[in-house]
Each structure stands twice: as structure tokens, then as C-alpha cells.
Length: 264
Image (cartoon, rainbow, N blue to C red; front, side):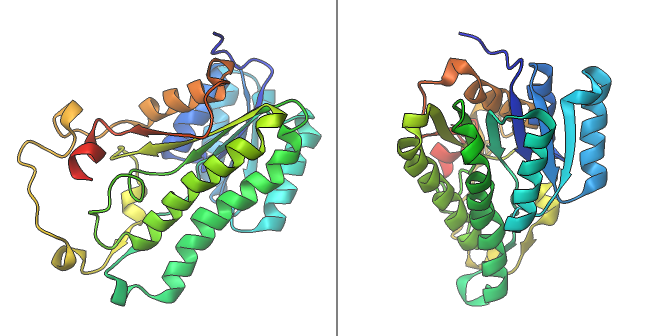
């Protein structure tokens, strides 16, 4: 089976850092042209510069957009088509952790923000991209999480977990809906990964509300408690994006070193 992506065009959201950047770089290394979409232009330009340095200037396109803004995504996808004439891979990865708090302390506006970015943003990303994937088939990969799929013990993550469970449902629904167009759709569910997303997580009084539990040997059995890496997640995405995975669809894949089996 061929893992190469030569001639393919990939949209990667959240491409400015973490899993998004690592995946953009790996897909480019495998031959794909990368539309790097995200909120912070300077970070996207850093990602594009690395790709252009290792590949060519035609292998990277910077698209600054908020995934919760439908019009902005329509414009961004139009730029991809104007630039390269096709779209083969969509990695719907952008999202936020949002505020984690006990239910009675979770502000309705914070709930709405997490839903708008993670769940509605995924819907907008796929709605704008799918018409172009239908032209020749392709792959959709959605970044969900262990939270809301196997782990329910992270107290306060109600809004976040709801969006991640919703993303898995979207993947399963679309896997069947889009199968006749030769589009395969899957969700990845990372556990603890060494990225900077924790820096953007606001936690309020979750320690007091959480049920007490102790993992003396660490929370991640496969690695003695060490988190996974963005590069490891990128390898999974690259496989699911390739023709080698074209018979895999409607599936969630956990990449967490058995963390969710221990904690769930």
C-alpha cells in the first residue's frame, strides 16, 4: 500500500503549532501540498517557511481564518482551489480546551465558545471542503480526544468532552454519507500529548469536585507516564490520509499509550 501523498492537496487546520504543525510538516514530506490554516498568522508562516525550505514554495499556502467563521472558511477553501485546483485531504484539527469548571460554575458564554469553535468549527470546515473532496474522493481526519470518548473522569471538561463526543458522531455519520464518493472519514483520539494546548486551558475549582484517584506508576502505562508526541500523532494522521487507509472509515483511533483504558 502506498503511503506517499505526491500530487495531493491537504487542508490542515490549527497548523501553527502542536499536532497541526507536526502533521503539516509530515504530509508535506510525503509529497502533499499544504494549506496551513489557523488563527495566528505568524505561527502559520513559521510552518510554511519550514515546508518551503524543505520542499518548494508551491508546497505551502498560509490561510489565516477563524474556523468558527463560516464566511472566512469559504474564502479560505476558495483560495486553495484557486491555487491548486483540488482538495484531497482535510485534517480538521483546530480546537480549544476552553474553560474546565464544575457545571454550576461553567459560564454559559464559555460553554457556547467551546461548542462554537470545536463542534461548529468542525462542521464549517467539512461543509466548505467536502464539495471539492467529492470530485475525486479523499480522506477526512478529525481530531477528537480521549475525553468524551473513553475518559469521563476529568471533572470540569463537560463542554470540551461534549464537543469531542460530537466530533466522533460527525465522523461516523459522514463516513456513511460520503462513502459513495470514495471519501473515508475517521477520528483520532489523542491522550496526553506534549503540546502547548494546556497553556490555553482555564481550570476553575476542578480539584475540589474531582473524585480522588491515584496512579502511583503514572497515568500512561505504555510509556511509564510520559506523554506522547505531536510527531507520533502526525504519523497516524498521515497513514489515515493515505491510500493505504482507504478501506478504513467511520472509526475512532485512540493514540494514548493505554491512558484511556486505565482512567476511563
